[in-house]
Image 1 (cartoon, helix red, strand yellow):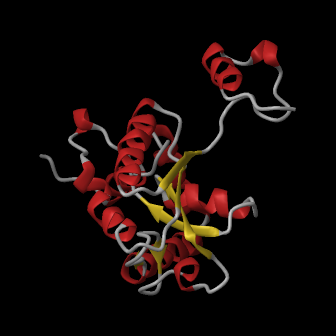
Image 2: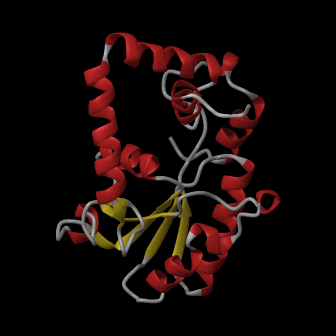
Length: 198
């Protein structure tokens, strides 16, 4: 008999969330059913509403409730600057810093040939069309500092430079408040290589 119970289906659904294993999923399921059924209904309604109403911005690929997201429709942003990020959460982190006031493009991932993720899967054709519009003067590559993120940044920088657009990479190195003694050697090597005049 391989009929799955409603409770097991709930646990499996919760396991789809990042970082949620079998025990965490079970704890969440029991909490919602035993102590917070109204909370469970609120979550269900919010998820259904989000899945039905949130789409990708037609310009930058960010998540949005409208055809153009608030950033792309703003007249206060510098349209000559484009920051390329891997995910909507990366965009939010950068934008909340208050330092960057340009436009964005969200890849929704990074190149990973071993996983079958190539340029088409992360929206490179859409990015190229955006670059070909002619209004962008600089592309800031803000992919994560992983092997795949670095490969993605390198791939995009080649596309950008081929169009005679300036390509820059976010800086990386020792974090503020970090102690050299506890910083790994790769981070230290990059910090030394990227040093600037004091």
